[in-house]
Length: 443
Image 1 (tube, helix red, strand yellow):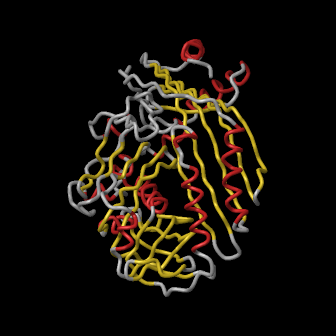
Image 2 (spheres, helix red, strand yellow):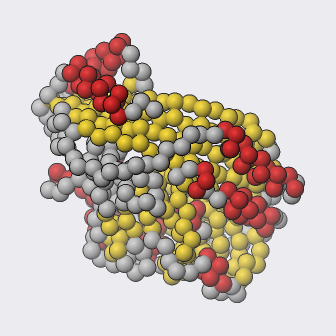
Image 3 (cartoon, one colour):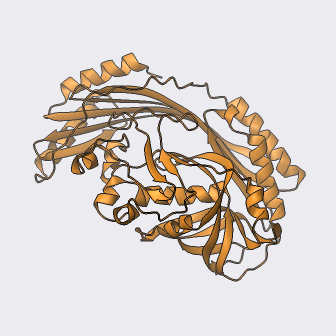
């Protein structure tokens, strides 16, 4: 940990050295420890510290960005030379607009000291469960602490810390597997006993899976599967850049009820149920954004550049400067839970499929519909008359996730918190009346 004062002094000194009309410095320092296990032994226990300095600059209608992972004098001089070269050799296109100083909510994220001994103790218990059932056990547990600071030539300065833990476990037999995963503010906030028991049950219950013809089935999706839907929906639908480029369902259906009235999705970087991040990579304060309310898509999230185009204010969802071409993305996404247990969703299903999670999901087929392909994985089961009848071989699906959320009949009360490519998402399970499976597998 550098601390706020040291980082401020470093960035202030660097700001003076870097030329250009407009400039933005983003310093991210992270410390992470990981314990990974496979075949019932810990085979990797690592600790690493990473530093990334992003510098974004602008001159007139030209702008450039570069990053380095070393901050010695030679690296910084090379960075400045690179930025000069980039600015000199590009046409005039778009002015770099930087946010003004912000007022931040006072957030005291509780930091922890990573413990390899504690992680090993948790892994020991997970492996023991597998060995008692003659199963192979795999997984990983990580602890991450980060400092993020932004300074720009408008006088903005932001400093914050972030910490979280993440665990995933898998059991594998000759013809079955079970998997569970969760994130939390620290190791104590993750129920590893529950995760391992659930993954173990999935593996044992899904032995000797049987075939099922592809077709449209009612499904009960557990939270891990729903997380894949939310990730794809976030990437393709909830970015202001996607809306402005008319490749989001929001550009067609904003204000219209296209999802089930049960669906309410919001993003909130200050929600204590998630991992709190008070500002984005431009230093803009995070704002609560209702993305979908009672099935009606309302608004995307903005960074500074997309907000100016729509004459709006940034909602605090800018990505790291080198990823800014993707536009803004939700980073603390919540799909609001329902009032029924996951067991209730299953017991109310006459004939359908229970899906533990999806794998290898790709939704580039039709971004407007978020039309995705992918496969089920780590526990797929046939439900008949409200009971889990038998395990199934994995199925391939081709399904619009927009249509799927339009067919939601019930939402579970259980939610899990997971990391995803732009931040974190909190998701419950869903019962969907029609889901299109297009292929079968041999495993």
